[in-house]
Amino acid sequence: MAMIPSLFGNNNTTIFDPFSFNMFDPSTETSAAISNTRIDWKETPEAHIFKADVPGLKKEEVKVEVEEGKVLRISGERSVEKEDKNDTWHRTERSSGKFTRRFRLPENVKMDQIKATMENGVLCVVVPKEGEKKREVKNIEICG
Image 1 (cartoon, rainbow, N blue to C red):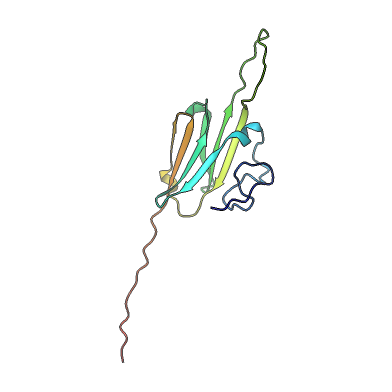
Image 2: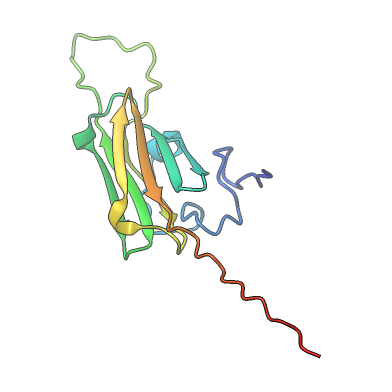
């Protein structure tokens, strides 16, 4: 699978990805947490599967929504750790803040059967696909 690198960092999104909203969407909240929320999207014959790394978050802190019947939205908030006046911080690398990722879903999905699970800091969203309609082939006898 060929990927076109993003103009704004190496976050595995593509410039011309027709399903991604992350490039030029002004309504998407921006913070360091967005670029650190990594999501894989794979398609199988039965479903589209999204896996998001959300370490340290509880399922109550993550939302999975479908907007306007066609956009999958995964969002949440990672809180800042409380600071104590007596503590001396030597390094802070873990991101905090809100994150939102949105993906335009294809037409052939079963919106009413979307399932989400979370285990060991990985959110898994399964979006089942509608079965392909079998083409009916009718043999025509040639007369003559």
